[in-house]
Image (cartoon, rainbow, N blue to C red; front, side, top):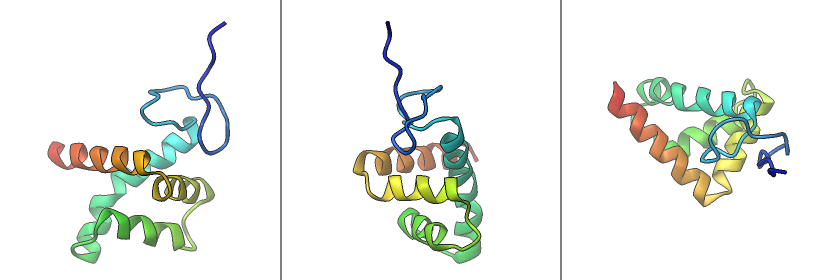
Length: 94
């Protein structure tokens, strides 16, 4: 029997790539972070990815899933690198 990988946040089954170790709900929040970084960077000037995550994580209007993903990224060096790589890829597409 194949062992299914679990989300690093909530222990639900990971349905996509193990590169992003999140369940579908946390993956959606992660994708939203990637998609919105450019807008935040334009609005706030030269906003670093870390500053972006700090602001999103402390924003009272950010949802629970997003805040959980932000915390996971901020406290896991490997996830931070994946996040930075994904931001870089996203920026090259534009």
